[in-house]
Image 1 (cartoon, rainbow, N blue to C red):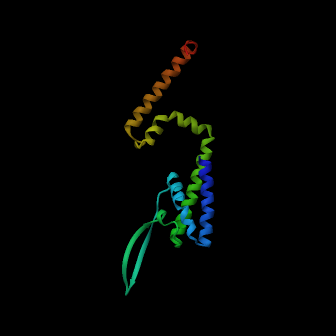
Image 2: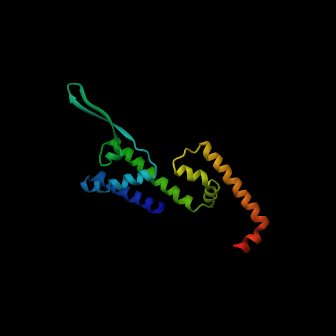
Length: 159
């Protein structure tokens, strides 16, 4: 999955650069896919200042607008933010691809399985509940390992 998302980011980044050279409406057709890739990579949305001048030294509007909602905008500050988002997303997906083939990543994943599960469900990682559950998991895994080392032949015969 991360390989396909990595390739999609690279493809959309090329499309984005072509759009900057020659703005056409068809780029906006891929904007939802780009935003989805950014969100799945956990890239935070940036905000850029927007000021509209009405003349006579007066400012009509002063606000901050979402970069992800304005990817098609060719203002320099929006373009630099979108470019940074693309590079962060590409790096994130490349890193996730490498983690998927790293055996130490999987050992850590299994070792901290309860913590990962509860983080997935939205529990803060420093929660005392996660720490207690992790300790019970390690204790349970140790007891199971000890029992299997003592009664391994009987367990295998039973299974």
